[in-house]
Length: 321
Image 1: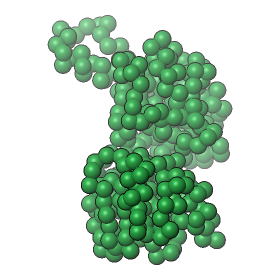
Image 2: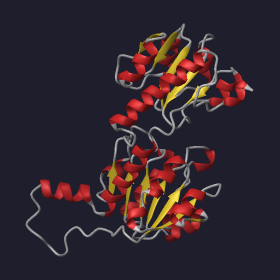
Image 3: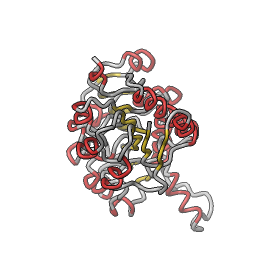
């Protein structure tokens, strides 16, 4: 069968696909337009796409032969899953394999903001360091503080568990109780308002769905402590970026660490000009181990789907019942 890959992924995944099928990989290192995706899909049985690709109903219906859509990401809000389900096309994602890498990045951002690492690095490189100064670059303690986790799924749980060494009080906001966090950390399930008001550090780990769009906006940011830090490694639109820029500029909160943005790849100019925010290029899962693991997983999903079987990580399994 024939597979269209919208952008080059690590070779381990491509090699696995080549053993069984014919693949066509977009040769350019950029996001394709809808027209280009539809053109690439012509005559193909499988579509291997990335979170940066918008796979809507028009794309899904463009090729009658299409049998499988495999997403190289844990999130799948870039795909119209309902449209795929109507066409009886399975859709898969790549969970678990990037859990630790993403939760580690959230901690990297938390430390960077709390201890003003990026700001201090810039200060030192530009020749401003003249010697030890008792008033220089004051940051925030982490040990013994309150950690708020918004979303206690795989990544949120892994992130929270990594707080063990810092003797933190853990609060979490989630639809259901998380027994692991409650048993391991004595974590407490609370409302979002309580979490925002009481936490020193708030980290977002929910998927982007209609209910979470702008979950954190001006109202929520004003609830937070002036000494608090906000971290987002989930999806950009969960946070109202304009409101966040205002909060940082006017010092409603101490700082923020972002790996994702509301209008990627664009980042608001207001954020770019602020020292109290650390900005990463959507690279939370960017470790060699994670990205290679994702490549193998997305390929395995594709291979099973093209056999007419339920992929290991199918997000619309109802089509097989």
